[in-house]
Length: 284
Image (cartoon, rainbow, N blue to C red):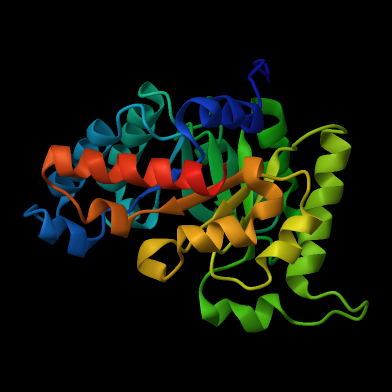
């Protein structure tokens, strides 16, 4: 297979961050938001909602992150809209990070990679969220795809929801917890792939997690996707405090609290612009 030369995700993000700031806009077309925008909860409402958000965001966001589940619930037609939305995100110069949290054994991960990640895949996403709870090594096909096509992988390490804390904080025989051990594996992989600078595997570390600063220290070669702002209770003050040691590598993200300003285009654009500026200020 011919492998095109593509600028790595981390470098593309760094360039966009310098122009637009670090904010990642969650594109979450929930039934509640569709209703609030006076749109039908159907494929046409889904498409209209996404188009309005991308038009309002225009060229203000470094990264836009569509949540796959809200498209998948409409079946094949939803996947078609998702592919169009990813293309529209890239058309306004933003990175399209698909939030799908895939993760399985090797052969299945190969199929996920071929279907979702990179310019020669069906979805052509620039990045993908994954989980590693079948073992970090099982992610190899996705990691290879990321390396070969300049994509970003964001592995769930420490989530912003309290239900995940018991599993992620479980102690291993060597004294580390699960989240710490996974962070160390990511760092080792990135060091091998990219001896200097930021590697292709990022980490999802929740804004509201008290252990975030320690995890960030274990991930010096990773971009850090930081969910939990707004509707999930996190603040930009939390971002500034917990990711102080990784300011240039952190992508704070929010969706529902931003998109609640719609559907009026100017109000929606103003809300997106405000979050972009506050994220830039918090991580200056």
